[in-house]
Image (cartoon, rainbow, N blue to C red; front, side, top):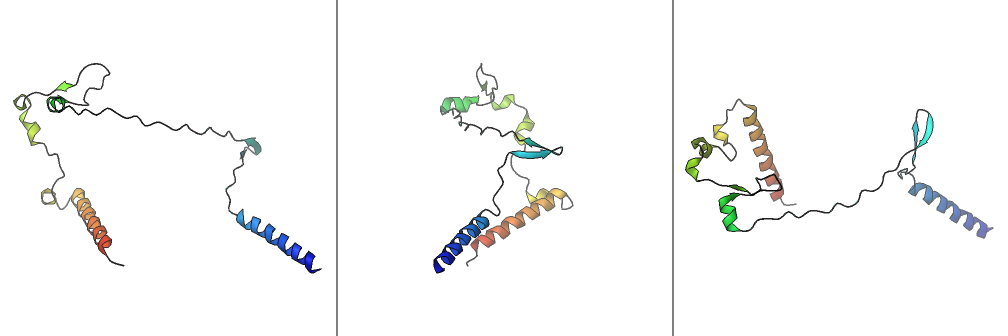
Length: 133
């Protein structure tokens, strides 16, 4: 009797462990309920791995100084040749290329308060990264 009891307990433990292991398993069935009727779902093919294209990078210093590389969007033709600075309009050289300093922003503007918040978040993150455990 002890042998059959042991065998029964062993079988029950196997059944119980398989139920527990499969309790939250995702259902991979391909049947859907649409319009009250069971219909098979169309299972799509796995996309092929896309190869990364390596774009050529110009390393010739002569070309980099005299031409605007990457401006030509056409397959044929050469890159745009840069002109001397005096041939471009004066306002071009006064354009701001970096962020606006906080002192130049109006304190009543949304941009000012966004910048303040961003600076505060960066400061807090920096302080938290310096804390010791």
